[in-house]
Image 1: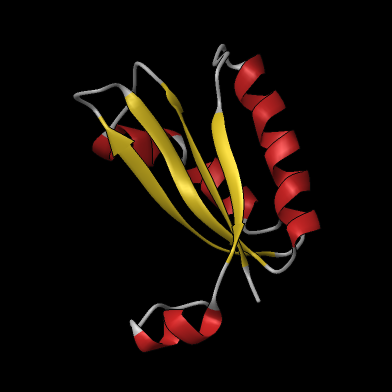
Image 2: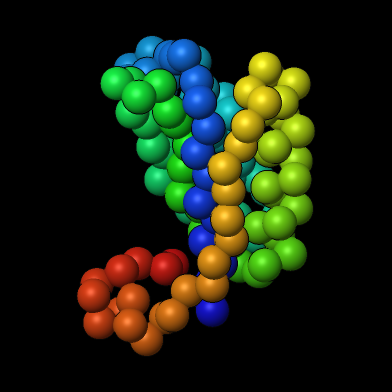
Length: 101
């Protein structure tokens, strides 16, 4: 079983290539987080939102990352972080070609 952390928050930018350039060091550092498996980065410039879908090997690692990341975002001026942690149903995910590795 894997755990998905879903996060989104308001942000004025950057988006697209500018986001990729400015946050590439952050992206590399996320790879070093305990239990981290992968992340899909999300953004919507029209609604001024960004976030991501993360996979972790345990609820505890997802929760620890969420706590740390929420504090980091608050220090960057992001007051409201929407987040939830959900367990995966690996059997159904495999049927629908989802990748959990």
